[in-house]
Image (tube, rainbow, N blue to C red; front, top):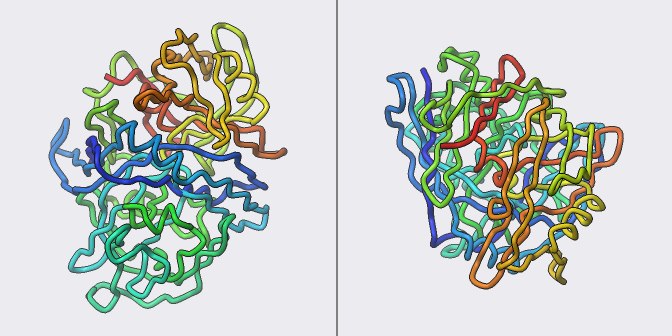
Length: 409
């Protein structure tokens, strides 16, 4: 069957950054301060969509005022490194913009998770997790294995190295559910010490992460929830798609895509690497001037802004009149007329207007691009996050290792 997750706007929650989980970038990864958006998905419901085989899970979108406030509140540069050994680096999820509800256990225990195409593991806080939010602010939903009749003991150690410190726990196995689809015997991590995530997680309103990248970058090569849905025959197609509403509701569709959410035709692009959702990027230009060519990009729902090599982003920012402040963000004059920003992919131009790459909050206008350096041989690398995905409906084809884009409706 085909399922979808509905994303709706929220203007009241999350005052903290996403806490970016970039689990298995295969090389050292030293980000500049990231300022990406956070989404709260508060209500879960599986409903019929464009066909009887489609269902959805609700997500909510933070408004611009809250996002810019969060940038100011928590501006961390987490400089942890991910080595070729497969160790994981998780940055601060101060960058996440969209998250929604899924469940673990029988009866179901609900969790708000970031649906992240930039990582490949499922983890939620354990009942005895320390540094997992406060009793009021940032309170977390926590997994209690003793209350689940489908829990299976694993207890192998689980460890993630953050730039700001370690996060640890143990593996467990239980029935999970996303978009109304049961995932039997899903291996996931119960996090018991989340101190490495820092204040962004402790005070944030999301519980965990559900990775939607490939098994090849999963810790212990643990099958991802979506891969298990495919293997267990729960979806007609090994495909999911994001529609990120612009100041409106959106959705994540599981098992296919929703033709009502885009205009024109889908343009398919093969992956250059089935690790993250990595594609070849022909060119990046502003106002017709090229700033990068023959490079690579990752399409990442867990990153709210656009990112690119620091020096190139600096040049791009200067070309549109953006100035870097002491907090590390680039801002622009809210009254300025800005040139188009174009990403050329597989010969097709994907253009963002000035209004589409600026986030306005009161008298502040944030340039929605940050510097982030990925060393060779895997870099330089760009990340096409939610700013890009809001403009372009994005389909992720797991089985055929390709993505598709079309202008969002």
